Structure formats: C-alpha cells, structure tokens
Amino acid sequence: MLVVVGLFGLALGSFLNVVIARVPAGRSLVYPGSACPGCSAPLAWYDNIPVLSFAVLRGRCRTCGMHIAWRYPIVEAITAAVLVLAYVAFGPSAEFLIACLLLPALIVMTAIDLQYQMIPDVITLPGIPIGLLMNLATGRMSWIESSVGILIGGGLFFVIIVASRGGMGGGDLKLGAMLGAFLGWKALVFGLFIAIVLGGAIGAALLLTGRRGRKDPIPFGPFLAAGGAMALFWGEQAFSWWMGGFGG
Ligand SMILES: [Zn+2]
Image (tube, rainbow, N blue to C red; front, side, top):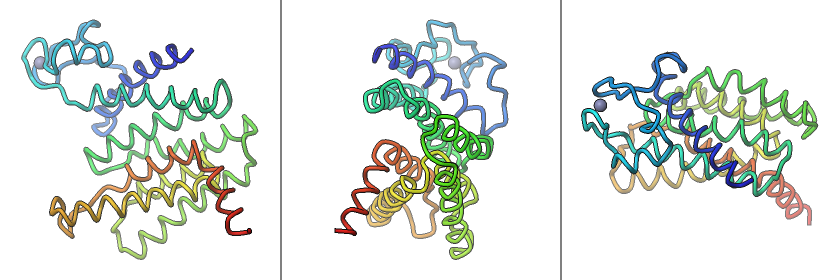
C-alpha cells in the first residue's frame, strides 16, 4: 500500500508542477499538453515520468538541451514523501484524505510564493470552504473549531497587515484562514507558532549573512505552509501538551 501511495504521490507531484507553472500565468491546466519552455517541443510520455525522466535526461530537454528546473523532480519527490508519511501516520482514515488535499496545496503555494512572491487566490479562497466542509463531512472536528480557526488565521494576519502597513500581503491572510479551516483553531495555533519561529530564524539568518537586505521582502507563505503541514501531523498533541503543561 505504501508503494501505491508513493506512486500516486509521484504522479500527483507531476500534476502539481503543471499547476505551479501555469496558475500564476492564468493558463489552462489541461491544454496544451506539457512542452519544453525553451523550444516548445511537446514532451513524449517517456520524457514525462516523475523523477526518472529528469535523471535519465540529466536535467536537460531532449530536443534543445535546455536545463530543466530542479523544481520538477523536487516537487515530485516531496509530494510522494509527504503522502507516504501521512499514510504511515494516519492509515486509511479521514485524516489521510484531508492530508491528500491540504499537503499538495501547501506544496503548490510554497513553490509559487518562492518564485513569484504571491499566493494564488484560486487555491486559498476555495480552500476555506473545502477545509470546513471536509471536517464536517468526516466528523473530524466541530464546525465551531474549524470556523474559529478561520477567524483566528485570517484575523491575525489582518492585524499584522494593518500594523505593518502592508509588510505582509493579503495572500498570507487567505492562506491563514484556509489553514484554520482545515486544521481547526487548536492545531492552527501550533502551526502559526512554528511558522513565526521558522520565519524569524531564517529571516534573521538571511539578514545576518547579508543574503537579504532589511528592505527586501521575504515571502512568508513557505513558513506558513511548513507550520501548517507540521500542525496537521502534531498540532492536536502539541496543543494538549501545552495546555497540560500550563495547567499542571
Ligand atoms: Zn527544449
């Protein structure tokens, strides 16, 4: 079963690459088929096999020799890895189904935010009701827990955007609300905590090493995505552990 989940993850990762390349440009996901961005040569099926084709072609287009971005095999491998981890953690369950929706969405948003400094509304806006409805349909948590998550996730970034006068974007607000819908407010609090710690540490490291100046924007989406993914796996336990620690 883990092999099946892994192969599904590779195929899904290949599709996510299409989403990452086309959604920011507003292009169709189905038409035309995959082609080399350099020479427009259409890709044969055997040049479009996740990870394997990149290795066989040594990262170059068969027709024109242009370098294929490392993003392609990385996204495919990470998608397969996180779905296998989710299956190991959750087994065949509602949690796994929710992981199959949330984790790929977070991978797409991380890649798009890193490359284009934006978080696409076409994923976050539908993601808010989908997260809420999935939790209701599976009985995983009450609608209150999910709705309060939406309010906290969106509200926190609303406050940050107002206070920082645009230092953070509306995309982060919608992603925060979507994470709240999927995770519920308890796990969300853990995810936000991780995102802020990671973002602060890596942001400080980039400043100190001179890789980024004080005025350069550092996208926060990837940290939110990482915090959200960790919260899906450990959020509930971390929250009750905190509460237990504070209570006793
Ligand atoms: Zn080419």
